[in-house]
Image 1 (cartoon, rainbow, N blue to C red):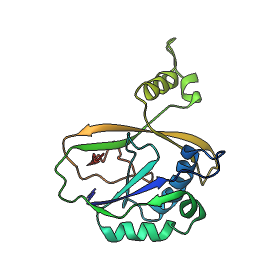
Image 2 (image 1 turned 90 degrees about the vertical axis):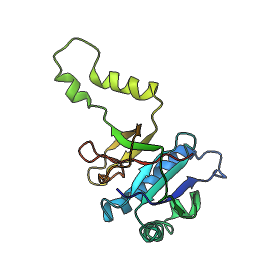
Image 3 (image 1 turned 135 degrees about the vertical axis):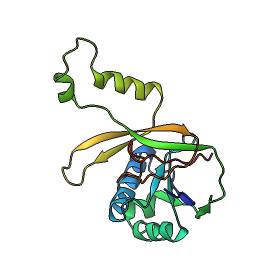
Image 4 (image 1 turned 120 degrees about the vertical axis):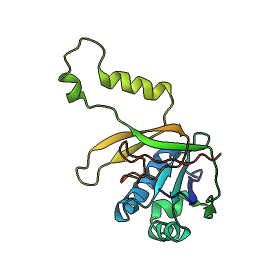
Length: 183
């Protein structure tokens, strides 16, 4: 993944006190995810730890980011609740790097099939995600309409790598890559 450019999609503070920024961030991500699926392996997602309301999207070219922005900016959720930053060039970035990948939590069914008497793998993985304060996104599957939580694990990396992002914009285990770790 060539992560030469990025744009931030920051959730603005809603004027309605009943609206939660993290719920709005999930809704903005849902729109971005739809665009990611239309242009597979083009965009990578970073969730900056110090800016929980920000979805940072990387691409190889500024034109790809402009295309993404054009695809999503008129959707009412993005238009009304997100502020899109200018596109930033980070092609000269020399480090540090971070890889953002899905942290899988097994289903309850997989725990029922476990034979050991210890605490369930699901419980252990949830505790680990909470202990590390991993950011997460609430997803509603477009195909099955099921709701699930996608935890994102940030791991320091030595170099960028050349893997391709999955449909969520995250690094895959079999195709790792890292993005510029920016403040």
